Length: 539
Image 1 (cartoon, one colour):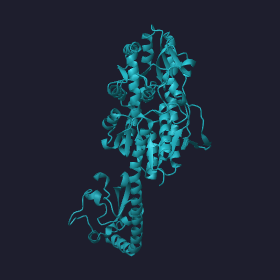
Image 2 (tube, rainbow, N blue to C red):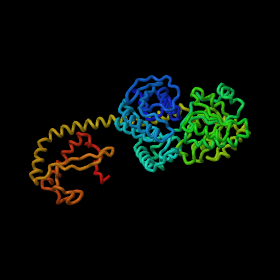
Image 3 (cartoon, rainbow, N blue to C red):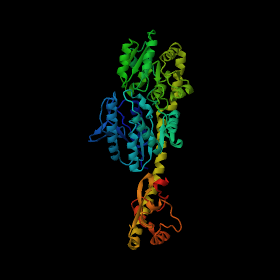
Image 4 (cartoon, rainbow, N blue to C red):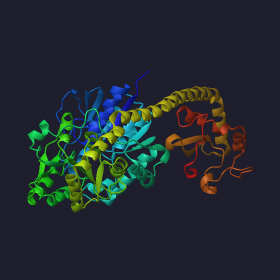
């Protein structure tokens, strides 16, 4: 049996250190390792990268081909400006998008095409590739635009928001399936983007519970960073725009009178330098910033924490889902989540009793919840045990299997339709070809009679809507007086219609006026068997 070939479109991929790039790499490699799939990724040039190990490269001009852990990576070249300003992000997104459109033409035929949302317009490139190959198209939503555009502190544009809204509605309407990270995100897609509820499935993010495990705080990471004798409140992962991390720094000010409590940021991101300056300006010695930790060291890094913090800007619930939560669960650590009521993190916290909830944006309350776990170590320990138990419901392997099952379900009917469509198209070509040859003498006779009748044109073209909304011209031998539509309006033909010519009456009775549509069938614009091609005004 031929292995399933899946093509993903997303700008960030290994060795980028963002959560999305790491999760996508785990998904792709899991599909290869556990399910024997062929996987191709149309990615961009790395921006925030880890060490580039185990990559086999082959240089290319617009598209660079690489391979890592069985995954074929097509690097669509683009600019690599800093993400700190809108102009840089915009240039990176647009140049990647244009290169990705070209890279989609370089793919071997996939069975399923999947688009993530980095950048938000990349789904258009994936959609074009899916239409080119006639394969199912899947939108996997990591975030939802234009609502997430509120994160662009240096840029506001109603025009851009409207464009992103239309692009999202266009893509969700044409996707064979849309994947949401939680029930709130699913509702956002249905209510805000017009998604078909039957086509939106929920597959949450995950952590690799075999790789990230509960560990002892007495480890090399704690010792190297002077954390052994501290009560560590940790934020680990991307230090970006969506997490509302200013409130975390402000909470540290309320905790400053407890010298044992240390707030530690681990990772990189566009807001790191600003937060460092803020902590310095506030004179906060209890806030430390540590560099990105490789995946292989996450167990030790996470074990150094006594409590984690998870935060999200108000108004983003369901438009973004904090993926860092799943690694925290796998590490068996409690947390304080400063998120809204309808955020997916809230539902998990309540279901598994593994973390405390705090009102987003309230630094005092966030500090008080940290103190609750600081003073009640039994509560912290119990929540840590519950967190690890919860993580088993969000393990990597079952989640990858859900994706595989979804892709198989889409690819199988598509393959059957492909065979059926191929046979149907072959039938159309053979019959229309024979029909054109056999009817050639009639064409000459009919053309002479129509022209001789009133001197007008022989053929009558009319715009019609074909498969996939494609507009084409349907041809007939003219059976009505010249300019009938202009003189009488676009009316349906009826008995004793004064617009019909004497020759036209014979053509209509014998249906020979439709002989030119054999050309439409031969060109693939129409078919012998199928729904009637309607005029645009009838749609």
